[in-house]
Image 1 (cartoon, one colour):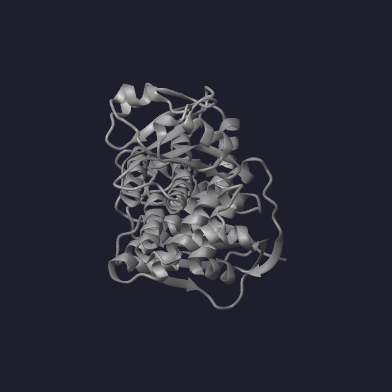
Image 2 (spheres, helix red, strand yellow):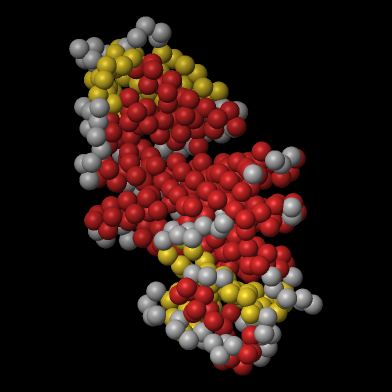
Length: 432
């Protein structure tokens, strides 16, 4: 029942008409096929290049259904029609020239009704759109088509044509529907990423556009990320050796992406003054431990030693625990990412009378003196985007700055230059 539960969860979240359990039961005895579908899900959801995704989807559908070709038709958002986005064995440029009507074609019927369609004698159906076959010199004998659902809408149609030496069956329709559901999520992810990259180039033009986009992107990415993490966790639990390592890499990438989504959401709230702070009296040492726990795995994976240079006697401040721990964790994560493997990072705290001083000192690449203030600007990164060695959106430090300053604190950086490490210092008001 494990796979049934996972598939039902996926389709409940992504389809208005989830696959029935009795349909899934048809695949229950097909161990290799189920494993292949789960592997496909992990691969699709860890690939964000749209062209690569489209090719992988059509190739896998052709393989699993043992047919001559498969194609993806997507909705043209500007015109009420479908267009061929990809197909095996055909020229994509020629296919893209063919507009497929929604109201009078087989693909259009599947798109409108949201129902799978099996036709083992296509040429006898009046809805067969012969222009496609004539344009690419390909004769369609049999066809299986299923909708590609994403949440409460349909983004397109996935078709398989010309089953080899046999007829398309209901089991084939179930397999293709599973592929289509996974494909829709993956294509949506790739489109969101593409949109994100395009929009980030224009954020300097208008702060309003930037804030609205970040709010939308962080919201829309959460559901697909949950599905990716769920499937990768399931695959890792039942895998060994190299397969387990691959699933672990997917989980690691998904966790990094989830962190970026959280950062985008926090930045949006800071910009719109919607971040609600709930200050309570808390020892600074607790905040440091919470933040260290967040980056401990990343530090250990790079053999970085974390040195605690703060006293055990409690130093009390009055801040929002969750947000302030996040601000410190962002600074620590920044230190880990820019430090060489096997180095040390020192985390300290000391009473300064009215304030408490915290610091994070690393042995990393350092910061040019003329960039010490610029690194706290939104989306600013010292390394050029095309050659940078460390990922990220460049918003972690700006979020830390906003959180600390909103509570009467401050943050700044000190460095003697590139290659000489950095020290980030934070001040928090001392609790009365």
